[in-house]
Each structure stands twice: as C-alpha cells, then as structure tokens.
Image: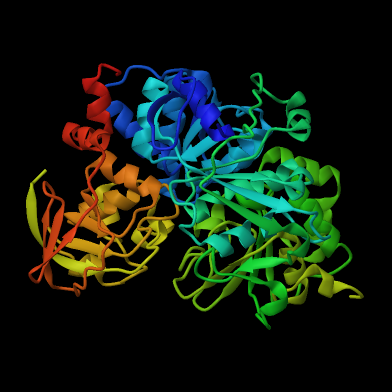
Length: 420
Length: 163
C-alpha cells in the first residue's frame, strides 16, 4: 500500500484498502474558516446537533476577511466566536493569536504526521507536506464531521512524482510544484493522490513541502503526500500536540503513473493568467510590467519565504511603480521576522507589512487590483478576477521571484539582480 | 428529485472555477438569495439577469475547480439552475453539490447545444437528449444515490442515528 492507503486503512479500521474502495474514516482533526464555518454552523444547528465529537479536535480560524473587512464579515466571525464558546472549541483563534489556517495549524502542532484530516477549505491538502492525509471539503461535510468525527472517502489511486537530483540556488518548492502543474494540467490529478519523493524532496525544507502540498488541489488532486522523515519529526519535536505516526509506501505499492522530474534542470517558474497550469520559466516571459507584488498566503507566507525575499531586497528599494505587500502568515512568523530584522528590511525597502490574513489572495481585502493591473503573487490561484477586477491579472511565483520583481518592476529572476 | 426535466441551456467551457461561479468578494454572506444575485458574474456579467428558474448549465471538463466554497453550488441552485451537466467535476464541488441538493450530471461526450436551446435530462436512465441525439451520462455510484435519495448528507447522517 501507499502512504495514503495506509493512513486511510488505519482510520477506517481495515487491514487493507485499494483505490476505488468506499470507506468511512475516523478523523483526527476538522477545520473551517470565516467563509466556510458559518454555513457549517447553520447546518449543524438545523439538524439539531447538541454537541461536537471532540472540542479539542476542531479548529475555527477566522483568516480570510480578518481583521474584519466589513460589517457582514464581522457578523460571520461573531457567529464563529459564539459557536466556539458554546461548544467549548478551544482552537478558535482570535485576531492576536491567529494566522492563515494552513500555516497556523502545523506551526501549532495541531495537525501531526499520520493524521486523517478534513477542512472546509480547498487548501487543507497542505498538511500532506508533513505526512498527513488531508483534503478539502465543503461546509456541509465539515458540519457532519463536527458531529460524527468521521467522513466518507473513495480511496484515490496514486501518482508518484519523483524529483531526481538537487535544485539550483533559486529553485524552491513553489517552482517545483508549478512545474508539475504546468506539466499535468489543472485536472491532471483529478480525484487522485500525488505522492512526492526523490532527492529533490529529501533536500526540501518542511516549509517547501508544505508549499508543494498546498498546491496539489490546483492539479485537481484529492491529496498530496510526503513521507514524514527526520526533518519532519525534528520540526514536530517541540510542537506536536499528539504523537506523530510515520507511514511509508511499500516497495510493491501500486501507482497509476510515475512522473520523473529532473530537479536540477528546473528554472524559476511562474504561472501566467488565468490558470495555475499556464506555467513558463521566468527566462522565457519577456518584459511584463507589474503594479503589485504580494508575498504571503498559506502557500508562501512562512518564515523561510520571508527570509528568502528579505535577503534579496535588503539594501535595495521597491520600484516606485510597484506596491509591495508582505503578509507574514501567522503571528508567530510575524514576531520571528521582527526578531530577525526582516520586517525592518521590508519596510526600509518600501514594502507595506500587514497583520496575517488571506486578504488579497482571494480578492478579499488588503490589496485589491484595479482594472488592467498586473500582480505577481506568491499565492496559489490566478483565476480571472481572483485578486480584484476581472480585467486584472495575477502571475504566481516563488518568494524569490516576487522579491526580485518588486525591485525591478518587471517579472524577474533573482539572478537578474546581480550587480544591482 | 424529478426523474426527467426539460431545460433551457447556458453553456460554459472547461475549468469553470468557483471564483467564476461566485467571486470571493461576495462571500461575506451565505444567504442564497444574495449569492444568486452574483452567480457567474465574472464569467458572464448578465447571467443573473438572464437565468430563469429551471435552466441548466452545460459545461466542459473540471467544472467547479478551485475553492471549496459551498457558496458556489448554493448560488447556482438559488439562481434557479436545475442541473449542471459537465464532462467532469472537480471533487469538492461534486461532494458539495450532492450535499446541498444541486443536481449534477457527468457526460463525457460533447453536447453541441447552444445558449438558449433546450435539452432533456433523464436522471433515471442517465440520458441527455438534444435535438434528437442522445448522450449517455455516467451513473452515480450506489452510495451517492443513497445520499441523493436521503436528501443530502445531513438528513443521511440523521437517518443513521449519528446526530
């Protein structure tokens, strides 16, 4: 069996599962945000539920439109807050303790390797980066899971992606996953599991793996999975709220397809509008002038991302034609970035630094684009109108490309800054 | 659910994502009537005015990709859409549609229908008819049929005594 199959079998109380099996799995953790929790709460109450399956295994994270952007958003968060208080849900994250959910929960050790997790947010798949089975669902599925502590799954077939060789200096998890999505398309792994391995993965940081797992949904995938190795367990030593369980794929595990990628040949890559699969190496883009650069989100708002960007922009200035918005993904990351002087570097360079929020990624607030404007973002989606006006455009890129672009005002590889 | 419907069609292409179905700027509420006002506006600005109760959507592959927002099928249903026919559905949208009771039909074939024309959808026999041609749709697995018959996921868990 694969890692995914083993986790699902264990949570379904079975010795073995095979792709296509319909199973009911016990859940270790369930989550929702300020957009998806309110409808889930309404469903929960409508059916007459009296309690949640386990108040410690549910997280309600107001992150999308917070700090509350308008009255309706404030009402939605109020509903969540009251629900959390009523049912004793301790993992409700008030504004001073919050973060973008998929950066926050691994950081807080609330989701651990070997877990089976669903969340009412499509990027719940992020936790595959630490060796958990995690997938996004809608509000009704989340409501049912809050009551029963379980959900149904069809066991997905797996695709193995082997990243051979080591990445070049500026190649991050973002470039690696964008390259794959470009190769297989936005439905290239529809209903399937993507399992990542190879030297390129072993060398990748936990942050890089979370970035990659975060974007498997952009290929339609049900989940992405990485083996929890020594790096993962070291990351969890001080933070795990529960005991991690490590699963590895058997040598005879079955894969529908194996994709081989030469990591050493990868170039800094961007996804051009309007699909994450519309990828190109930066070197082949031509001159693309940008109005805004966003560094942040559940994809790339972690401390490593801020360090990479700050190192590039240090002692340089943001182009006068560019608005550079930096959003640390959690309060802890924000504080760490402050200690390391990264925030000072960004502000001195002319960037705006915001409190954690999903904000601009989904065109919510804190950086909406006007008609005709172009942005480079370290986020995960560049659909039509995603960040604002339907005639605005988003290019998805790594933190390194984002920082270099903020300096030059044109989509740039960090290498092009040499000598500036 | 009705066994057979005749519906006027609105066509859309491949990879219609949930940001197009209901843009995030309208997600500060989950009131179906409010969401219906903005259904599909970023794909077709006039859609909320044009669509009439009972109309159907015929789309390409990977319909509903992107965000997990259940607001997307809710908006379509509240706008009066009786059924979405697509070559394939993104998995979260598929679950959400079943859970909230929006009829969806998967049909791998090209249905050459144009905006404003009519199709017949026979849910029981899994057939779509357009201009005397019949197209076969994918049958739901037994479990999904059970969920649909129960009226969605919440009534289903209640019937099983899980609430």
